[in-house]
Image (cartoon, rainbow, N blue to C red):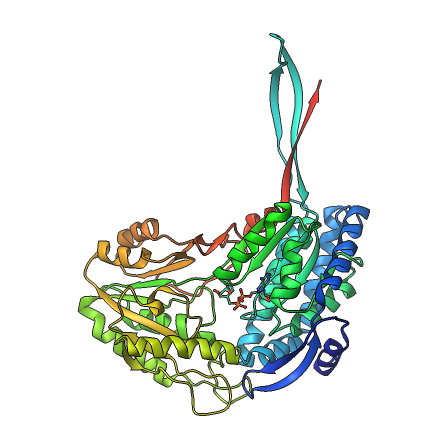
Length: 484
Ligand code: NAD
């Protein structure tokens, strides 16, 4: 299965909508193109998914049989690791090495959730009940069943294509759901290969249905579809709100993994070399296109100048380039649209009086590259301080004490992640309680594990992925009462 065959096959996918070019963000040239699947394809896919679910071809298998197939998916991902990494790096412009590091994690998603196939059970309850008009108690045999939702919609963004796909598909498959799967229109390539691997591993027809198209067409049709019982969405907070509105028709359940504006607090007692390096990488890696990127850094006043200088130095020395360019450490933004958006924030900031310590412009070369940017003299009313930019742009502000640091950190509508760098462990754990975020990292950043629940506070999301919560998100609870 060559990379070329994926580029060709996507062209042949049937569709009824617009032709969508897939653009290489490094060259700004089309790599391939495909036709938006259109709403009729979503209807067909939903009918197939529903039929597969009702026939029990997947949900009806014993957990251990589903687990075997999921292990085969993991093995196939490893066998095709090079192609998957090449597709993602070609499609997003990320360094090849970075894409290569992600692929084993994707295989692990399938292995980890394969283990859960045999471990999610209900409970038994020892209940005696009195009937409505009776004063005698009757023994009951009462228990709960954990059942898959049925047909679910999985919609995800472009920033980590194969990672995002695996993070959703693995638990949904383990739970026994059938699914409509929509990757981002910018990055459909690795999902196409994964779809083939899933079929090759033995997932029955109709269980996984890949839909390639725009958000406002394919995505919206999935979200509004009456046969879809739950939507698991990763993407921007604005689209998350649209998903909630569109789900109202059949009151489908919704899981949302949304945007962030994550704070990083650096205290004067921190290991500053490490804090500076990690805080810089925590925003500049992948050109700031990570949901947990620490885009607001707050530094205790005594070390403020040193931290600003250190982060700016890393920004200036970070080599940007295409996946195969020698020494490239970070790639471009995904699209012209994102480039325009990020530069728009920067222009607005400049006219509002923000100080650009370094960066603030696109690179003078082909590709959607933005110089890693450090901004100071930023005020809370500014749009670039409040809104997620999703680019390599960080604001750095000073603070004096814990209360001020926490107030500034929590002064956002988002609540995805937060970090504190301090060697005072009592303070670190106090901060962990006070920071309003679904994930708090202490003296570390960019950490992840399949076993640890991940989800957003405030407008960063609803529900959790990963860990036990990750599979339970695709299951509902039924209570069964039997009178003895
Ligand atoms: P986006 O919200 O524009 O798109 C995400 C997905 O939703 C795409 O597949 C898109 O086609 C689809 N979509 C768009 N409009 C839709 C609609 N009306 N109905 C249904 N689907 C629709 O997000 P993006 O710009 O592709 O990705 C960046 C965003 O994703 C950032 O906000 C980032 O923080 C967020 N993100 C969050 C997490 C997390 O785990 N919390 C992880 C990665 C990215």
